[in-house]
Length: 385
Image 1 (cartoon, one colour):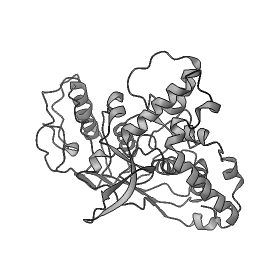
Image 2: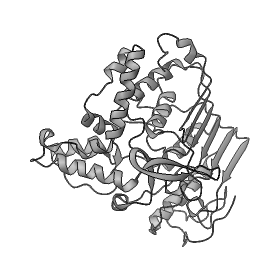
Image 3: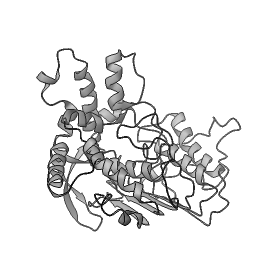
Image 4: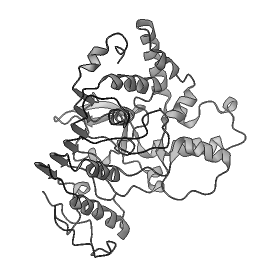
């Protein structure tokens, strides 16, 4: 990415971009269903995102984009930059492969603003092949109270707790992780302490989110200090520098608040909006929008082992209606150029099809008003397609 000014022809010659974490993807039976892919501490430095954004500008011939087990911030930046509605390009992205990542923000079609200055509006037209593989596509999200106390879902982290994970080849490797609940609760603590009139920058010490990002921030500082001695950093990257670890942590942290919000004071509202959002579409909503806007050009569509069933413990009728409606909406689309379609589920509860619904049927479980469904339960054995 640092060759942008000295050798832009390298980026201009790229046809395929692949971003993949050096770690092994999560094991498909035990680790995959418990991974929300929402790590808050990976590749969070604004200078890194700025370098990526600058590199994408010169990659005008890219036809294939693959993100396989990518870091959340980098995955989001790649998707928003390559599908930027205003990006100058010689050819649109033709093939998209997304595996083991979170899709909420990266494929959100329009935003009012973005912390890292990423593009606000996306254009996915021209896509011919889409492959979604081993990632969350839930139409129903976990309640905020459950997320705060959740210690079963694990996220990869810089810092955190060392844990041995499977490598997919019958062996194991050691890496650092956090639990989902540990990262969510620190956002709550940040909000509470920031609203405490007795807490200030001077007497607080490390704020909760600064503590979460501590290892990542210090490591990034060392990386960019070494880079600055070796190469001349572009002015745009230097301008993206955020020296304060507290400010950088606030910039990096973003979570969704599920449920009602009491009336907040102007100060509380500002702090709340810095770290939480209320209106993030689900990954299921965004992928359905992706299919809808590329239906006329898609020749190949693969949905492979995606996690779509409501979280364990969700038994509300509305949760099942949303789950089924996603498939019904998919079946209602028409793909005139489609030559290959693959849907594959697995022997884990999270990947099952809704009971009484078969691929490409008429979703007869709905009545004419589209709101009432037959009695359904999610405790049956998975069916394979």
